Image (cartoon, rainbow, N blue to C red; front, side, top):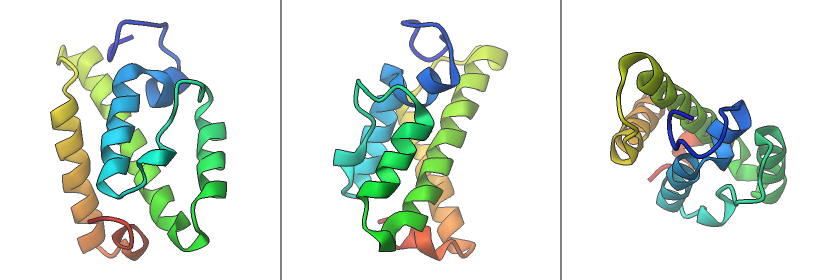
Length: 119
């Protein structure tokens, strides 16, 4: 596994059960005061976790949360590819900064639902 070297690489491991990924989710969700919704150790299937997340958050926040989930998943995938194809080492601080930068850009570009939750 390029991000943690602890388990075989699967999409689900990469996106929610990898220690590196869970730390990224926790830090990003902490920024928007939703850390309680971060993936837990027993969350093993990305789609199930996302569906449960949608069911738990207030309706008014769902579109913004969905945008944030897509953004974080995209950056986890990009980080994985940078490790595999460019030989980069996983960097929690760098991925967090990249997500913050893109979230700001998305908000400036008109992602008003993301803007309702993004600081």
